[in-house]
Length: 167
Image 1 (tube, helix red, strand yellow):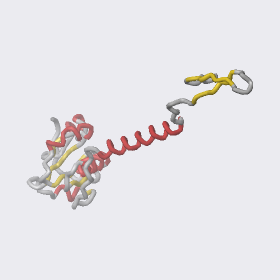
Image 2 (cartoon, rainbow, N blue to C red):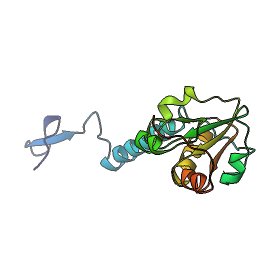
Image 3 (cartoon, rainbow, N blue to C red):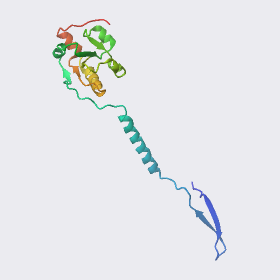
Image 4 (cartoon, rainbow, N blue to C red):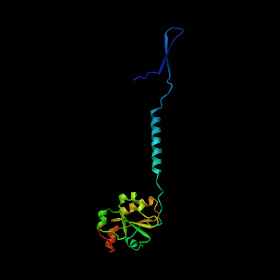
């Protein structure tokens, strides 16, 4: 497919008298495709980086160990510690620590306002996996003193510490 020039001026050759065609170049040269693609990639990368950093706080380094044992957690004073259970309601009803608060892991981000920042926090789950995720989420959300209970409610119960059943 051939491109048509924007304008054509017809002149005659003075020595032969034959018409000459002179092509006048375009007034707006086109930008090469590679340059457009490069610009689009740059805009995408800059936008991504800007959105990634938006509303993200720098993770807080806790003064507490990443995990504590069930025996250590059982010694914590309820006045100074907030026990956060991140299991599902059906698991909670089977058994839970009497003074714990249930906020399922999937709801944690939306319910951060229910967690006191002035207390030490121990995150509890069934075996210790979800509590580590909950702990990291809280640290990334600006909570300073957060740990997770290794072994979870399973170890808590097997060691004979008190539990409550039902809602």
